[in-house]
Length: 371
Ligand SMILES: *[C@@H]1O[C@H](CO)[C@@H](O)[C@H](O)[C@H]1NC(C)=O
Ligand SMILES: *[C@@H]1O[C@H](CO)[C@@H](O)[C@H](O)[C@H]1NC(C)=O
Ligand SMILES: *[C@@H]1O[C@H](CO)[C@@H](O)[C@H](O)[C@H]1NC(C)=O
Ligand SMILES: *[C@@H]1O[C@H](CO)[C@@H](O)[C@H](O)[C@H]1NC(C)=O
Image (cartoon, rainbow, N blue to C red):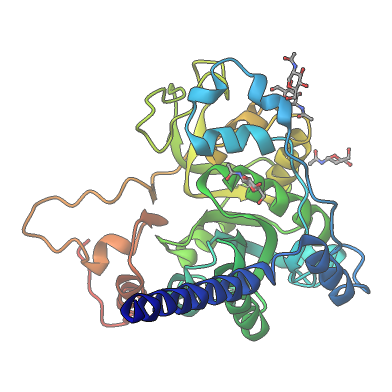
């Protein structure tokens, strides 16, 4: 009898502790994610800035669930369809004076616009020290911006936001909006950037738009752009790794899977691979104008192609852009031989340490390459 009571007491005690622990955890996870409170803070922080204000939360389009076959689509595609119409999100970090103000922005010759997820801290750090360094190159200005959304939720989201805020305080180079930084939201990221550009940097001559894991030779970019006949950024230019005669991938297993419910057409317009491409400020603004009347497609580089097509323009091919990697002649040559990288404009993909080393090696005055 006594044994039983002791055991019962012990059980009750353990159970009680568990409940206490559970309540504590619930309380902490519930604390920071109140949207309205967050919006109020953002408004407070930016009350003197006319552009950075909070948009009302974009509501899910519940009718999307009526689309034929909706329930058999993968979760991220259902999510895309629910939120496809959303184009405005509160801005968390801004650098409105990046180009010295809208009217001065023609001073910026090359604006580097680099898509980067909050977690990619080490990639950003190495880019700041290498090809994306802000500088005067051959007499013209290069400026840098990372564009980002948010990741995760609760504490992890807050931590990553804090990280970006810290980086931003030191480097002044991040545009961040409060939307989920996922693969299928990359088009949204592009549109938000173009909207920002129209307000803050409409006259930038040229832009490089690309990923944070490419090796881009920005010295060569400047040289190429300065050598263009008859284009100071006020005429059409959109060039990179040209992709033509392809259409949506209908295989569910692919990262690029786009079902008919998202896009019916079996063909894509010509476009440039999203790892990195060059465009003029003029073309960027044309694309922005067109985007206003084109439904969002999840694959961002294809979407840019659609906008160009609607304006009656097209992308072109640049031989120096190797988004599919570099062709190295034989298996016993060093694929990181700097001589292969001196002449190119872009190679996908590089790890931070390789990036750092390569940037230094191609600038070594003692580097000797064949004819
Ligand atoms: C679509 O879904 C909404 C919300 O779930 C529902 O109210 C509506 O009746 C549906 N419309 C059609 C055409 O099925
Ligand atoms: C919501 O989804 C339905 C079904 O795809 C679509 O017809 C409608 O235009 C969408 N509404 C908005 C506001 O995008
Ligand atoms: C895009 O971001 C919005 C806002 O965070 C989110 O509601 C939506 O689910 C995201 N879409 C995809 C496809 O990840
Ligand atoms: C984009 O649209 C605006 C407003 O309609 C117009 O003023 C501007 O010239 C357009 N820009 C380009 C490059 O077509």
